[in-house]
Figure 1 (cartoon, helix red, strand yellow):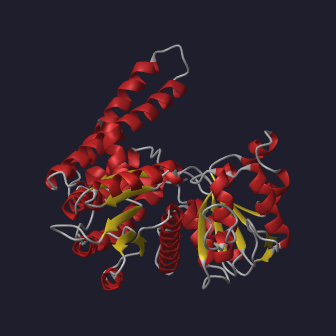
Figure 2: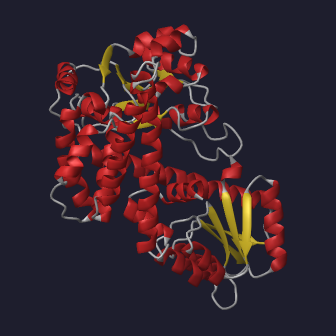
Figure 3: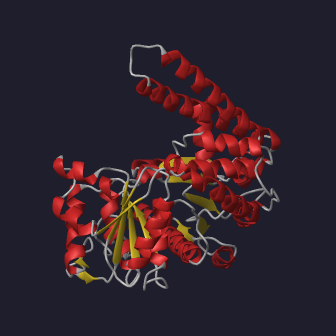
Length: 464
């Protein structure tokens, strides 16, 4: 979707800036412009991000080559397309050495520029996919937090061990945040495919029109903008394992294509005339009741039976609180290493509150709280939040104890609402504290909080 592509034009000639803004906006891009290298550096240092920067080589004060060098010195890897005039071949060579993604020579045709933009975006996408795969391969051999003492999770591990020499399809279900991906990685690492790729696809993170190309790929020329072929996640997972997270949200037309892969091991890429054969093991996860979805005809019954050969249920954290101490110990070690901290243990008061809390966000919520304690070296915001939650919950229980309504139902609803509001308040307090510590440098604050920069901007927008 072009509207999601932001382009910054940097050129000292106002006529060129106006021309580029006009033609690129007409093609659906989000375009802005500045007239100097100094301005673009100021925007970047403020935390603004761009899909592509179009940068003129010849500019007064700070030319395009120096601007490009400074962008790379700041460790920003935005794709940069250099604009050069005829006879500037030596400068173009230097620009490519300094990290330019591509270049185009003035004067140029509109279509020529758009092809260049699409090429650098496709290259960027492929680089990100490779990095993602490398990260997944690194994580494959690292310890995950599938640590437990509870009998329920020990039974899950035992089942995984029983099927370790098979390629049977596994359905993992449980509430959001319980650790379904961790279980999937455990199943993969216990299998005969442990040395091959583990590829994750979120069926809910992408719109339906993009999910098909993400799963199955496409051929060059399959649609406008498909300048190079894409193998797709199934192609990348060949001889390994693909993990379909939140499969209950997969659109019905794609369910049919997935069923074909499960039955025959083949699929057809967009724009292709021939089928592609793959050898892939499928693990799937959902927080939905797929039996209900089958009855409501939002999930194919034949696909449900295909993926539900072995079923692993992951109980919520509130039903296995005996796992909380060992999870805390593991997470402390993990994030002490990551953030170079030396916090040996949590206080007895905090652990006591952890054992009383209902954990609506499950293990993910616990992980975030441990991360905050380590990053901030301060338990007090979380202690205050959980203590306040416990006090409010007790008042609600007392409030409804003499009510004519069934006592369990209203109290549960109140606890849920209170949990959400209290967690938001604690989160807000922590974010503001870190922003103060970093003099409101949002990029540094995001790094300290252990969240994505764009996620921090979104949270700040919600807070205002």
